[in-house]
Length: 614
Ligand code: GLN
Image (cartoon, rainbow, N blue to C red; front, side, top):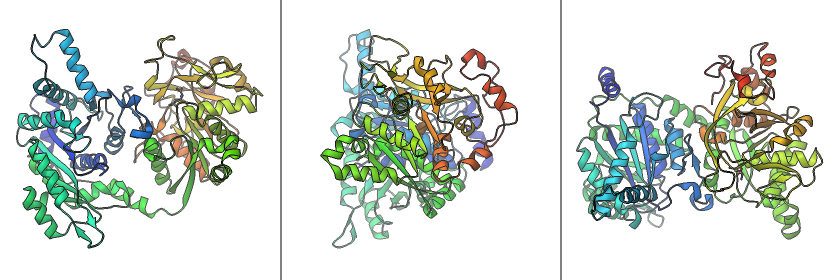
């Protein structure tokens, strides 16, 4: 088997000879069945069989991308290396498969129509009437074929399998062009290259405790009527399906019993790939894709130990997240995942306390004293405080108070993006005595603008001025917590999504008073990391480290927060100790600009310690 697998890889590298295999995941009955996590887990399972996997998420809404969508309504906006603002499911794929996707891996109705209309304006359709079928449906298929070939795992050449997730529920009006296109696509790529997995629901009626198959039957009938034939059914249910229930579904839906998988409730989502393997989902998929002979038995050792470890953790670490969208945890999904990755790797049970930022404000003390008391009680009970990114002025004063509280009481603190900006505002107000210090985002007329609008492009047009995607941060000294946590690298690449930044003209005043800017961009004008050296852990970052955290490779700064919250930061930093003399050498570059960093090794790594790398 191993040998045959190598043959497949060789075919990939040579290009041309290889045919991409597609796994389409659709959903039926209701939304919220965990289709995204299921699709990611299918990817993990196939990867564990030795295949290279990429993924595409289709969102049938009209927005071009998720950038303009409220996290209230749609969950967090996930940011990619290339600056793509995409659906949070792409985060699941990146985390589960340890890949880096591109903005084109998220297809929306808006993007497809825009491409077709642009083509029409250019006259590419040669006078023809432009229609949903075939022009939109062709554009969808071309897009899928093109994007599936983009390497996403750092290896050259395209992947072996592309997992496509169709958002929404089968039968939705807005997904019709996609279902039509995918029906045509399955025919176009041919049998043996396309596998359709339909995620459905088998509810249990509490009165009789019976597993009901009718919703699944109806949804499969709907799927077939749209020209799509399911190869595998993944049924969400509280417990495993009874044999007679499976038989019934098999008969009514024309899917073999061994291709009916139950997605029963599991204690944590890392069990999902294990659950799929246990029911031999990989054999069913590989069978449909004619890959049985080339793939190996899935190796999920790391997933098994992590999933089991997560279930066993007892000792809590309490982190207060002081934010705006505290009612919807999906609004901070990557943040929660990054906290979880770090806590599990430090053998702690993560407990998140959501603190609505505005409830910490003096105004709430008058208007709603109970909410005020409750918010401060949560904040004061926390082992660590995290202030995440955000837009708009609601709750900003509460966030500033939270940073002040953490700073004065030596509570471990991590401020991300807006969280860093408000930490700087607090410092300017409390330590520099600049009472009206503020960001010009919230007070355009402030006399002490310590955070200002610093667009990379146009200074006059607001649209398209967001600093988005991967940017490099150069450490200004090695003897600081962030540089050590990042494994003593000279620089680190992280993802950004912001317009405002610390005012470079105020940096020297802030530094003189003890707030150190330990990471800057290549010009030295943009402040990327701020630290209080005499605090157990007080770190603010202009970027979003949460987007690059992985279950097996937690984000360095989250690891720092959790370790500090558990009193383990010293031992963690000790593990990252830099060689003697290096700290001195690097500190010569303090406050320097990029040219002074010319001597940094190309890979940015100063030592080979087993640190966490970005
Ligand atoms: N609103 C702030 C800015 O635009 C922070 C953005 C964020 O936290 N993502 O700079």
